[in-house]
Length: 549
Image 1 (cartoon, rainbow, N blue to C red):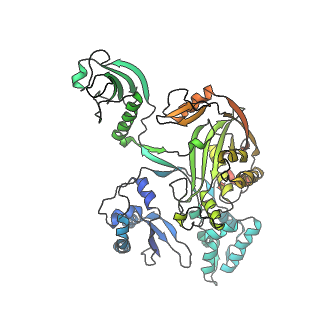
Image 2: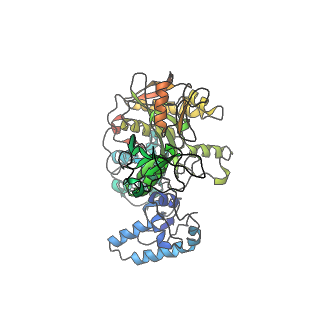
Image 3: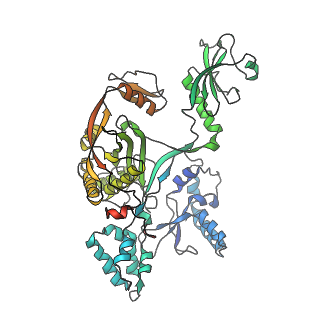
């Protein structure tokens, strides 16, 4: 649902209300709404938007209703009361629809991984080749001529400068500074994000031990058990002091005598719905859950992954990175993630090549958005329930944009090179289910070659050591298992995939495979990445000019 933009907003021209980011804001802020919520309960979740006269789309104003009200009050603006009345008048008709939304948000949202140093070339071109002072018609001629010098027409159109010049009085004399203020590409600047959840990371902090609890503590700690093996602490959390103890007692209803119980940092029994746990793994899982609840104030963002099982065996620091157009006015929901307006997603890991050099390897590069737009153009409904697919920028340039961002990210990760999956590997992975052959056989290699021509980097290949099928890591019911060629587990389950992968690497066999790569040896520290095109090499390593973003 979206609220209709109004043209009677106060103070800042034609303001309107928009709730396309309502759900993500609620989940990110972990905001629990009251059941009988009023207008101002929703104010932190409702965006202000601006629609310029004659413009086709609105633009986000960059703040919510609550933030705008706080700004007006800090300025002691006389229009505060008028803004409050305007907001309540426009939102009240939509309160019944908003009341049907979730009160308690899911613990799932996206966070920004790192600010991208993307820089638009258009402002710099206006400074360097534009006249000092000219009429709107003369400015239009000068700007449209830039397309013959390599400037993307999409950049000109989306900046809004052409439409603003067309609406300007034709007898006006506009300075270069005035035209620069007409250039606005903020709504097409992507963010690098990942999906995450909020919580306290209590895992992987256990050490094995064997500490017998004194018999005198039995009553004080409300522990069960008699005789030999009454209670032995077998696992203790390294930082929080919680313990998992083995105890022995009999029950009239069950034959089992050995149980596992959980003790807090003071040795007190943590009550459960049953007398104890049948295995230490169950007790540790319960202890981690209880610690996460108790120490929630120490919580932080925990990156989540969904598609790790479709990555090559081995590798470290597996991540699922999303390139998001958060400020794009239209809304698109991708098929693989819950985050709104994902232009492209990348599944990556750090690997070593045969020479021991670090490589950022991309298991997959994909754009659900443009794939759905392509399917829609061919008359194939990618997802009938979502209706018409929203238009998106970078229709032809998203592969190049993604590779540019990944080159910067590879350098930031300390990698010597950037490598990605070959077309043959993708065909084997998709097993005939329509692999994106054009992307991996032409578009990505073309993007890599364009960067190799513009920058002091080398296009080549990376020989990666990949574990063969003699050992496979699979997620079982009790954790990550290492299985042989027959599908039989060869050891007990591991809590984390990294542990299982390490064991499989130590016991498995390897083969060398060649993957396309870009080697970054001659590239200085990247400080700016062109939004469109490849740009000149010196622009990548110089500081961005003010107002060029």
